[in-house]
Image (cartoon, rainbow, N blue to C red; front, side, top):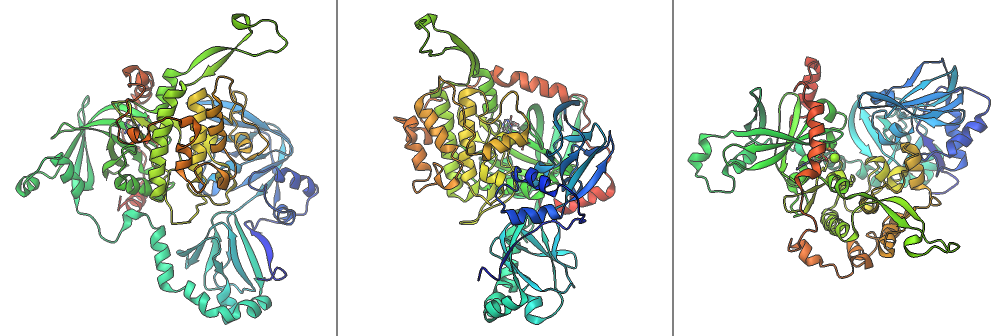
Length: 634
Ligand code: ADP
Ligand code: MG
C-alpha cells in the first residue's frame, strides 16, 4: 500500500464538535495519558478536535462507582474547578484523590472495560472536556467512499443489529461499497480503540481492485463461520450434554438448593474412583454436596468447603452470581472450559459445574492451606537492617539500623516461584495465558505444595495470536496490557516478577503507602524511567531475576526468548535447585500449612456474611430470562 494513499486515522469518537479555546492545553493533558502515550501528534489533534465541553455544578456526581456499560465509556479532562475521587471500601467512603485543571479521569473503565472503580464528584462549580469512544465506523445503508485496514484494535460487523463477524488487526472492511458502487451492507462498530489505515476510492480501485478475488475469499461464509465459532464460548457447542441433578445441602437452618448439572460429571463423582455397575449408576443420578466453612472470596465469587455425601470426599465449591457473571460471560465460560481440561500437578482441576436460578458453580480440588497471601501474611515481619554508611565510624552492632518490611525467606520463596514457573510453562505450552497471577490466586494444598487457581481471566490463545482485553489486578498488570497494543502470555512472566517481589518484600514494586491511585501505579508500570527499588537484604540473584521478569519490552523479557521458560529455570537464583524433584512432587515443601494461616481471614469473612440472604431478592422475570439464555450451556 502506498503511503501517499493512506491516512492514519483514529476512529473512535463521534462526539459533538465544539470550537473551544485552549484545545492546545487539552492536548498536552492527553499526551500524559497511557491510552494516548504512543499516538502521533496528528492523531492526538484529531481526538482533541472531537472532544466537547460540559459544565458541572458543585456537588454534581460525574462518575458513580460501579457504573458500567454506556455510563463507563467517557473520559474527562478537568477544564476548571475541583473534583473529589471517592472510593467505597467496606461501606465507608474514602477520599482517595482530588482532580484539578488538566487532570484526567475515567481512563480505567475505558481501558479495562470494567465498571467505574470510584465515584467522582465536583466540589466547586466546574467544567470538563468529554471524550466519548465506541462508535460506528461505517453504517449499514450509508454511502461509502473509503476502504479501511485495521492497524490496531477490534471491531464488530453488524447486520440488522446482529453481530455477523469480528475483525482484528490486518483485517479490512469497506471494500464492497467501493467495488460494487452500492450502499454499505453492514455496520462496523469499534469495540476497542481502533486505529485504521484508510484508502480513498480512487487509490483503492487502482491499487486493490485487481485483488478482488482474494478479498472475497477472506469474507467467504466458511472463513466467517470458522472465525465466529472460535469466538463463541466453548460451552455452547452444538451438542448439549445430558443433565443431572446436584443438590447443595446446608446445615444450620436446613435448606437444599437444587441445581442443574451434567450427567457425565455426576456419575464420575458418585463413583468416586470406584467401579460401579450400570445398574448402580442408574439407581441414583444425583450428587449431594453438604456445604461447610467459607474458604475465601474474590471480586466475583465466593468459595466454600463442601463434602460429597456418598463418598465423603471434600472439595471446594466456587459460586458466582449470574448477575455479576453477565458482565463478562466469556470469562466464566473460559474458566469452566480451561479448568475442566487442564491436567498438571500445579494447576487446580475442576470436577463439575452446575447452576441454579441465581448462581453458577464450579467444583474444585480443596486446597486446605489457603492461599499464598495467607502464607505471606504469616511470614512477613518488620526487621531492623543495618545501613552501610561510609562516613559513619559506627560499625558492626553499632551501625545505624533502619526498620523495614521483609517477606518470606528466599529459599521458601524459591519453592513457590519455581512451582508457579512449572505451572505457567505448562499453560503456555498449551496456548493458555493465565493473566491474573497474584498471591491470592496461588493456593496451598494440605502438604504445602501449590496449585494455580482462579482461571477467571485465563484465555486460550491461537498460535501467534494476541489479545487486547485489559484485565488483571492494577499493581500487577504488564505494560503491554496497559498500553493496549495487543499481548500474549508475556504478561504472565511480568506478573511473576511482581509476585516474586511481593513475596520477598511484602510490598508491591509499583505501589507505595502514599500512592494507591491505580492510574498512577499504571503510569509507573509503563514508564521506562521509573526505577524499581530493591530492599538491601535482597540477594543480587533475586534482584537480577526480578529485573529480567520486570523488563518492560515483552520481546526482551526472560521467558519470552528462544529458551522460553528454560531461561528462567537456568537463572542463577535457581542454582542447584532440583526441578525434577519438584515436578515429581518429591521435594519437601519448605513450609507445612498451619491452621492459623488463614483462620483470622476466614473468621472475618464468615462474620461479614453471617446475616446475608442466599438469593438476590430483586431479580425481575426479564433479568432471569436473560440469565437463562446467556448461561444455558454452562
Ligand atoms: P475470584 O475469581 O472471585 O477471585 P478465586 O477463585 O480467586 O475467586 O477464589 C477466591 C478465594 O477463595 C481465593 O483467593 C482463595 O483464598 C479461596 N479459594 C479459591 N479456591 C480455593 C480452593 N480450591 N481451596 C481453598 N480455597 C480456595
Ligand atoms: Mg481470585
